[in-house]
Image 1 (cartoon, one colour):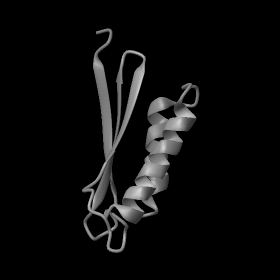
Image 2 (cartoon, one colour):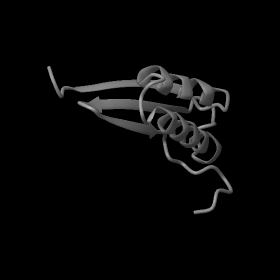
Image 3 (cartoon, helix red, strand yellow):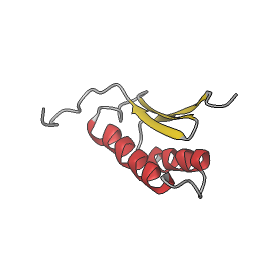
Length: 91
């Protein structure tokens, strides 16, 4: 079906070593020839890192979910966590 929405997601433990896995997930889905692939991988890396370092996702049992969606030729990247600032993070 042309234009159908496609969505893939993966949830990663809220640990710094999982940032690499999040980047690899985005890269696998978009592939090396996608015109915005490098930017999407960089954005995923930066946002997942921010979630782990500043968003409170580094606590025991916490996680970060990365969603890559597409509809036709458009691609969407969503990174989600519990959005709880870690202690000492400026408001």
